[in-house]
Amino acid sequence: MPQTVPEQIALQRQVNRRQLQMIIAGLGEGIILVDPDGSMVWANESALALHNVSELAQLGTSAADYRRRFELKYRNNHVLADSQYPIDRLLAGEEFREVVAELGRTSSDATEDRRRVLRFRGFALPDAKGSPESHVLVIEDLTQQTSADERFERTFAANPAPAIICRLSDLRYVKVNPGFLAMTGFSKDDIVGRSAYEFDVLENAERKDAALASLREGRTIPQMESILRLSDGKSKAVIVAGQPIEIWEDKCMLFTFMDMDPRRQMEDALRQSEERFARTFRLTPIPTMLSTREGLRILDVNDAFQSVLGFEPEEVIGRTGGELAIWADNVSRRHLEKAFEASGSFRNLELPLRTKHDELLDCLVSAETVSIHGEECVLTVVQDITERKRSEEELIAAIEAVMRDASWFSRTVIEKLAHLRRPGRTDKPTVSLADLTPRELEVLGLMCQGLSNIDIVKKLGVTQNTVRNHIARIYMKADVHDRAGAVVWARERGFTGNRKPEPKRHPRR
Image (cartoon, rainbow, N blue to C red):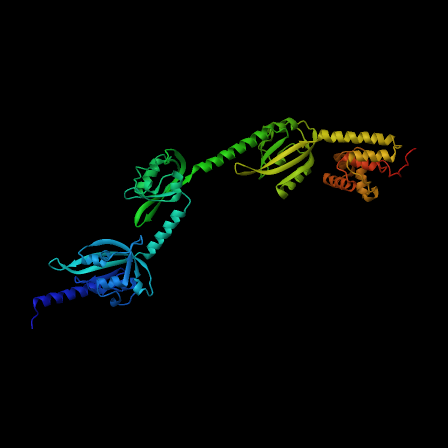
């Protein structure tokens, strides 16, 4: 029996639908076909997987059945009304390119609820007369993209660095973070939606033309200084940079800013500190040198250095420690350098220095590591103690002269002299000459004869360090602090260095 026209049309429709299903079955996007009467007639594997079901019946047999099984929410957490569901909008004759919603199971069917963010697109397939033959619902999974967007949103908002995002297609700002609002005093409504021409962050940039060219071409804008307008009409110096990014598939430019005020305040404080250091360095009455940490090359000397040692600045600046003419001998210089290398500083090392006029000065030398313009340097301070030592030696000589011709002094007088050199002591000495080693006795005897450290070095043929060590041990054992005290201590025990210790005489009556 030949087919009627309606039957032929229905058959042709089935053939067309099977061909369509074969074409779209393997697509990555979810596809649902809906008949004009509202029944859901077919769905591909992707559509079923997006709804976490395995067969068409689990999606629902109609639009109303679908709504009972699945809940859709906009991104603002607003639940879609029945008429707002994509399938209902299709059946109402509406075509749409994008509806983004979060899909979940309804409370009555909430088993294994795996919520996803989906983008729906809907259109009709017309027949030969232009009437809807089928409705097609295309579904795309945006869950991962949305998660990435949410992470970006959280990071962007939490970033303390001021930032603003401009969409390149129309040069309008689409996002601003709290850091930018706090820095400028504007509100979000003051910025978002405005054109880059209305609020130009590159208006006062130092390389504005190059920055604008990079903005138009979507290229990275390197860091540059600029002046940013604030909400109160004032301005702020900033460093601005731009980085191309994509936001919701829109090409954008992320502008980041660094407030220059704290940096300038720090630079001003550093400059003032360095100016104070320079003034102090120049005006201090103690000879002072500034040298590099590496190689100890002289960078500068102060006026007192020139005054005491006689060298002009140009005669020493640029020279290394070994090239300076101030050292009495290389042994002393190497000892000083080793002391500095051991700890990066030292205090009151006693050694002789030579002036430009070939005079030897007894000096105490101290050094400390300092930072100048971010570079490690060495500050060396020289204290001339020649006069002090000469006074001590003259005092020692006077004591020796008196003691040499006044052996008849009573022990009481000697002890009073010792008390004057060591005030505050009420106990009698408990250390005797027998507690000194032969070498220490020899050194003490030369001290009593008025010999300086250098003279003792020459007399005994030992190094200055050896002599210093012996003297330090003598001071410690005798509980004295200087040469005069050591001589008095020896004299009160009848030791002059010219002869062996003599027994104490009883005081005359």
